[in-house]
Image (cartoon, rainbow, N blue to C red; front, side, top):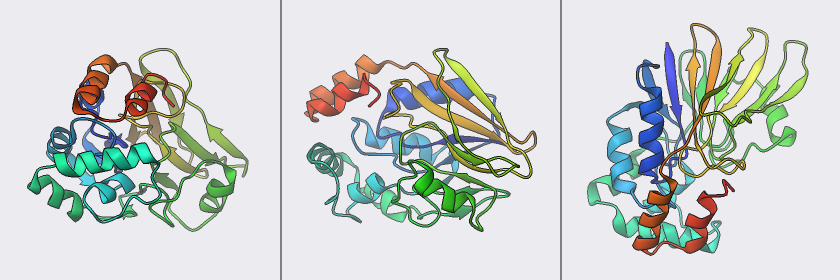
Length: 248
């Protein structure tokens, strides 16, 4: 089974559409690790598209904030402004749909889905301090997570060595294939579709192939200027659409 992993779309329809076009014919089921909305200009369109595509969708922190399950007190001022805008833009149906999304972790056949971490849906896995306890813990061998907007993740090799999974490449499309060894342990982040923060403004996604025991990481350009123009016309904060071009 080949699973398309989508996360941190953040209402960026142009980025989502390009990722789905790139993945067409390459996967059996789509899964979403949260944050469909927030920041971007097309929350309703993104929800509609992902809702009709993904077999499993878990909530992210922006999904919770934009439907009133969280007060966004920990967000920076620009993110709070975007949250307020999104709440007003959502249709009643999509507002209630976000409220119905389950929290992670969700157990799949041989791997786990979370937004932040298996222990806390809002935790950021940013380095060995957060990753090592999880890799050494009792969780399933493979955990797929989002939230950080950094494509790649962390692993313990069969020899017990801790490593970061780095996906830096200038080419579009498939940028890294990682083999998953039976005695290794893995935290896999497919990368943010709509708000990358790893210095690469291209949309990120991944395909988890459980038959071949590998993960394929993808990066692809999208019409960034169109998304930025939509955000500007919607009155969303300028720093939010300027940072899209930086991937930060």
